[in-house]
Structures are given as C-alpha cells and as structure tokens.
Image (cartoon, rainbow, N blue to C red; front, side, top):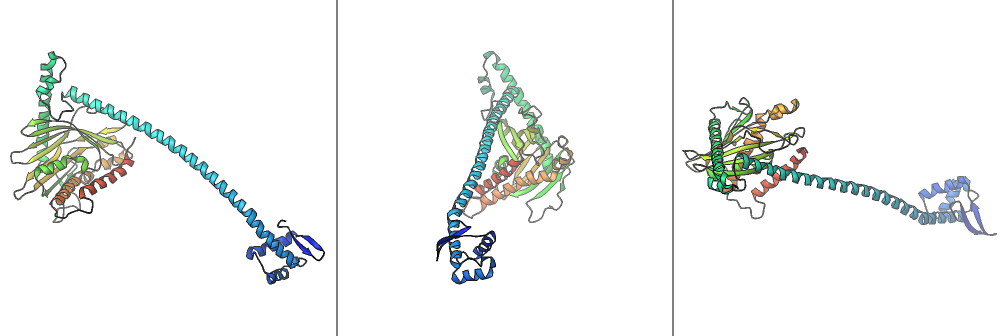
Length: 418
C-alpha cells in the first residue's frame, strides 16, 4: 500500500481504491490538521470535500492509517539521511580546519626557531661589542684590572689589555660624569623651560607637580612628589623599569662595574613598543650612572651611548635616543623622600610617516606613559608597604599589579610588527 491507495473488505470481498490527485490533495490538507480523525470527523470530511463523495468512510480510515505508517517508516529514514549528510559536511569542515591549524602550528614553530636563533646571535654580538670595544667582562657583576689581566690569553698582551681596560673605563666614567652634569640642572628645573600639562595643575589631591617641554631637542617630562619610602628603596623600585613601564618589551642590564664614591655604571639595552602598529618598535642602548651627592641625595641618570650597540636589523627596530634623564631622590627630615623624575627622549619623529609624527612629538604622551607611571608606581608601593591592612584571603597588591601588567602586555602583542 502507499499514499495513493487503500484496502478494505467490502460486501464483495476486499478491494483497493485508487485515489485521484484531487482526492489525495484534499486528504493531505485534512491530514495536516488532523492525523487520526474519528467516525464523525470522517463523515464531515466527505461532506466538506465533494471530490471524496464516492469514497466510503472506512476507506478514508484506512488511508489515514497507511499515511501515518508511511510517516513513521519512511520519515525516520529521511531524517537519518539528512543527519548523516550534515555530519559528513561538518566532518569535512573540521578536517579542513585541522589541516589549517597544523600548517599554522608548523609556521609558528619555524618562526620561534628563527627568533631563538636571532636572539642568540644578538647576544653574541653584544658580548663581542662589550668585550672588544669596552674591554668589559659581560658575565661578571664588576670588573677590575686584575681580573681583566687574568682573562687575557697571551701573556705578552696582558699589560696592553690592562692599559686598554683602564683607558675605556676612564672614558665611561667621564661619560657618566658628563651625563650627571647635564641631568642635574634639568631635574632642578633650571636648564629647561617647563610648563604644566593643561588641566593637570598641582593641587591637594594631585600626585605631584607634573610639567612638560618640547623645546629642548626632543620631548621631555618632569614630575616631583613625596613618597614615604627611604631613598635607596625608591631608587631600587625605579631602576626596575620593566615593573612599571608598560611599553617596555625588554629590559636587560648587560654589565655593571663600580665607578668610585659608591657609584655604579651600567650598560643597558631596552626595547620599547611602538605607539601604533604602523611603525616599528624602537630600542635604546644607554649608560646608567647611580651616584650619591654630598647632601645625601641619590641620583640615577641615564643617557644613550653614541656607538653601534646591539647589531640589530633596521627592519626590526628603530634606534631612538635617550637624552640625559633619570631620578633625584632626596631624604626628608621626618622620613620618606622627595622625588624628582625627568624623562627626556628623542624618538626620531622624522623617520616615521608624517601622519604618525604627533605621536612621537608629544611630551604629554611621554609624561603619561613614563614619568607619571613611575611616580604612581612608587607612591602605590609606598602606600602598600605603609598600610596596616592584611591581605590574608585575597591577592596581594603586588600580584594584582603583575597581573595587570601581563594583561597590558597581551594587548601590546598586537602592536608588534614581525
């Protein structure tokens, strides 16, 4: 039996009824509304549809039975076929995606291997520069003439290398003293014309006095404030630039050695993210000098080295210049410190597209990203250390700062240009 015929046992024996297209259409219309009509409903169907006038009620009943059985028997097969086809399509899509992911994974592994190789090459070049040009050991925290002599291979050249070491060390000390002499007038506000940032004049609720200048060969910012930490604690916090400067991609001290009068000279390499994805990141190769003044103030000043520095490809970085910058930390009589911060950089705005130059010529951005960030970080650490509140069941503030710094770093990853 099918939907076009029905069987029944009449007075003359069993017979089959062949339905016309009009009759089947009428029955389908009724089936869409009622799939199992009773005797009275079947009579009503015959009355409402004249094309069914020659069909008996029992034959209509058999037609509905066959129609219901056909839906159960053949409908499930159709559903299974549809589901099987959908699963096959989904499987092909997932296979294609898996293939793409495997190819991307291979590409990323090759890229990681290349970056590791380039990093090793950069380190070798830096060590070569430090040893050959400055005669300074990279692995040792300090250097002296005796250790330099001991590291020389031929015995006949010991005196020559010792003489070169003393000469280069003297040159670096002279450069450090020159940096200090140029930095102190800036920190005291005498050699640069500082102006307040619009809308950030000092008040009772402000962090400190923040000023900027763009008429000093580059862009500069200066901040002054009070903190409850001792000078040496403040200096150690500020020298760890990667903990508070969120644009800092890499910060590494390659070597350091004493310079007399409790002074320390350090050679530093730093990479900084670009303010936009349309430009390359920049790097700094600087000398940092930490010393103590006669009045007990601690001074940390820093300036770019005028040499080749790390041998990096111009397609990866732009070499920027740090003009004499740093910190002056003076002890207060009642405890705590008076802090002066100066950031003076030349980001070589001429080397980027003209539409991007405002980002490299704005002292306000330098103040927000570097100077104010340093002052806020020191004051926040000072408040945390002086607070009596305990954090037994919550994260420590330092952990929250590190977590926030990592989130910022993930956002900055989108700005890194391969």
